[in-house]
Image 1 (cartoon, rainbow, N blue to C red):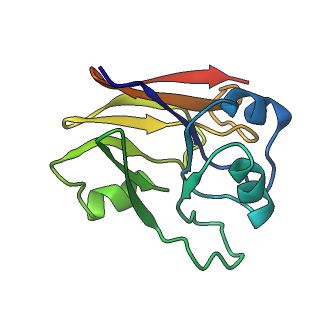
Image 2 (image 1 turned 60 degrees about the vertical axis):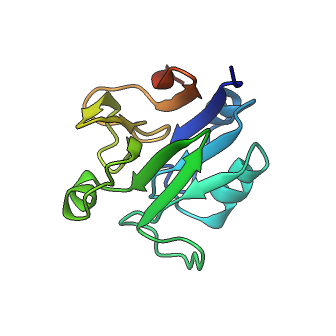
Length: 153
């Protein structure tokens, strides 16, 4: 049995990484940011916690030479596809081997299924919408596959 991998999932920080979000992500093995980062300072703060995979959001105008609109990362044998907007994921279908799809953009947290993939939208830690509270998500991958939970900040 292999050890579980814990992944912090965050989106729509818009230039601010609240202390509560940093605290919720402490101890993760990897962080995924699903766009609308709002500045490289946020990425630097996240990288001080764990390695980061990030995608560009619709408001990301600062130059991020290494980032694209889509990212694919494999962690603990699980293929994770990351887009900022679910509309883009529909335009560029995810692969059959994808076990987790991560999106942001709506500022509304969501956990559910999209085909065979676990779909996670972590909401926003700074600008939640729809009466929601600030949130991030924690994704665990172990021998039983991926599972996720939302963390209220």
